[in-house]
Structures are given as C-alpha cells and as structure tokens.
Length: 228
Ligand SMILES: C[S@@+](CC[C@H](N)C(=O)[O-])C[C@H]1O[C@@H](n2cnc3c(N)ncnc32)[C@H](O)[C@@H]1O
Image (cartoon, rainbow, N blue to C red):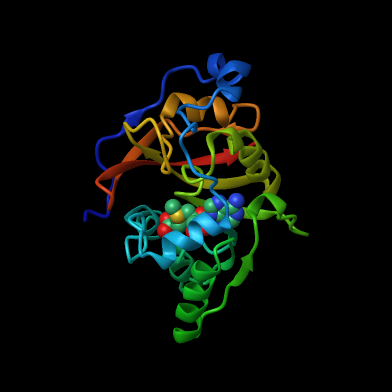
C-alpha cells in the first residue's frame, strides 16, 4: 500500500457553525437500537471466536505515514482501545513512551506477548477506558477503531476523556471509520458528525482528512486534531 495519502476529503469551510450545535453533539449519527451491550465480555468473545475483522495484523499505513513523515515523533502517547496493538508495538519500537488501554483480557494478553517477544516496553492497562484517570497528561493520542467501537451515546463522554487526557497543544491522531451501515460496531463516523463531536473551542482541525483503506472493505478518514 502506498505510504502517501491520496484523495483528500476537504472539510467544510466553517467548522464553527456546526460545533456549537447541541443537536449534533447529542444525536448519535447512527442507530444503536439493535446493538448488543458492548462491554468487555462482548469484545472478549469476539477475540475468542476469531471475529476480529478490524485487525490488519500489522500497523496501519496511516501510522507509518505519520512516523515516516516526521509528523509524529517520540513522545508520551496513549492508545485507547488498543486491541492486539500492532500500532503500540510500532510506537514502542520507535522510542515512544506508550500507554495502551483495553478491557478485553485477550487483547492485552496478545499485546503483552508480542511486546515481550520483541523486548519492547509499554504500559498496558486492562480497564474500561471511561474509568481511566492518568496522573499525567499525554502529548499525543492515537485513536483507531475505538471511537467507532463504542456506543454512539458514549461519544460525547469519550471526546471529553480525550480532551482531558491530552495536554494543551497535544495531538489526536485520528482515524474516523466510514461505513454506510446504520448499525454497528463499527458505527459510522462521518466528517460532519465528527466536527460536531470535536468542537472548535477544544480542537483545531486539519484542512483535510485523508482516506485510508481498512481490511474490512471499509475506509477510514485520517487526520491530526490539535487540542486547543
Ligand atoms: C474494533 S477493536 C479495535 C482494536 C484496535 N484499535 C485496532 O484497530 O486493531 C475495539 C477495541 O476497543 C476495546 N474497547 C471497546 N470499548 C472499550 C472500553 N470502554 N474500554 C476499553 N477498551 C474498549 C475492545 O476491547 C477492542 O479491543
């Protein structure tokens, strides 16, 4: 896969008209009526059953692009909903101080085994990310298929956690899942809804989001948001 992004998705001219809309912050973009409880048992079962279509088996090309282009340099970084954590391994190997959270025991165990096998270090936390209260803020967060994996009605709370975990000027390296499906997971993260969720008084948006192919025949839109 190409290491450079192609086919930019330009963001609409004014973000501010959307970010103040309480309606867009409260209304999920998609239905969760038929969704199962997305608790640790649900995700553990997905790992146990081998139903892990999101897992590339290697780091995302978006992460590789950000690293190779120098846009992401060694720092204190958090990976929420890390799964088996191919990106955690890549970041640890590149000299980052990585903290990774996931509440599925199988995900953390697989990641720990990989890290130990490669003699790499990262802080692994098996917990619900909504309960996570770090002592210190982070320089960066890598968000990949966690936002689309939680219930849409948890998104506002998740955005508040992300904003709180990052120090001012910190960067959110985000991959927003695009899907036509009205149910999930993965739940769709269309750009207009994301602009409402990540408001301009807390986040500086890039001029464009850039499409990245996803193994589940889907597309993610990649962009770096700065914590104001
Ligand atoms: C779709 S998977 C993505 C894993 C990884 N980010 C990747 O791209 O390969 C979503 C992951 O988020 C974890 N997760 C979902 N909700 C969570 C929560 N509230 N707290 C901690 N982990 C959560 C799940 O256990 C699962 O491993």
